[in-house]
Length: 478
Image (cartoon, rainbow, N blue to C red):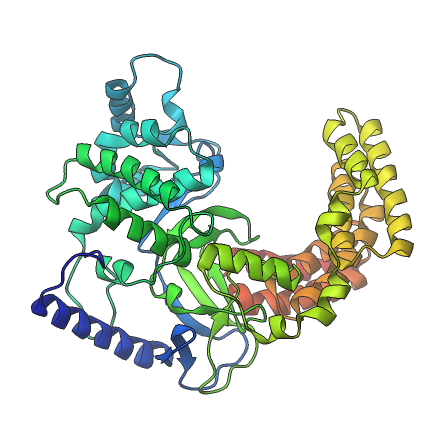
């Protein structure tokens, strides 16, 4: 039930029993416990010590949606990029009911799947409730920015399907249901306080749900606003093994974890199943709080704190933020660096390049800017942005030899920004090892790839397809 619905004594007792069962499950299955803090609210602490790479928590999303910007190319159930996708015929029928012209092609919102199995899974999970109103969903959300529309789609999915939740709890496992979703803490209004924007989105969601074939009455605007703010403060970006975003997900057990800009845990999503696994980044002692980073920590303290305040409604007081000023001077002002005329000219030239020679000239502009910034010291983040763009341009040109230099710079920068065991460092080392392998410098390749394997086995797990591919590359190099 939604938090703003009245709770009877029976409901309160059931919710209390469910939380006690959740606590026992966390204790016995994962060696974790929840505690309460006046400052942070719910915290998750270790009951025992954990070594780097050990699993701290593993759970499937309660619900998720594919990001709109990849919805035509990725399966809407497993979120995998597939060349051929089968479309739901019911969605096409629903579209013809809501659209009388052919301005908006049906494939912009029709659910799409990589095969029969994924289509069946999606139907049994939630699409059986959505299919008849898919056209209505897209008509109501068509003018919204992708991120906001995807958030609304996820709310519609959760509210349509909550009637099918299981209330049964086995002794060995824990069944997440809508009670867990509605119990998540609320975040701030849109934009840090735009009540009208939240109300407007709630009304759109309400109109969709009013047309749905559901035994449950449509929720009030207040209920939808409450859920929207819970999602804003607790939902996850679901990404692939390269940490590229695929969708948005509701993971109530994962949402129990708090944030730190110097995290001791990292998230991973299993390909196809999208199961969220939390692993230890470093050794965690008994009693220590388990935290992951809610955002990319490659930013100065004011930037991180501002983003956390706007998105989650709190001012971060982690050890990284408290010690911020000294490190911020080293990181520099990335916005000023990216507003530099030479940067704008170089990136504009690269974007407009239609032939290799034009792209080469754009790279030369970047190389000149790199030489200039080496003396002007715009800050580490500015140099990272430039190195990333230089590397991308050289890879597009197929210039492996020159690509090694900016890739090496990125590896060294990531060590300083993220630490020695972060997946971003592991992935960059993988890229650098690949470049050395392509040049036939196998000794150097193995050195980089071995370190990448050491990191990514801990962050992704030994059964990760990425890690298995990395192991194969190392064998070839040796």
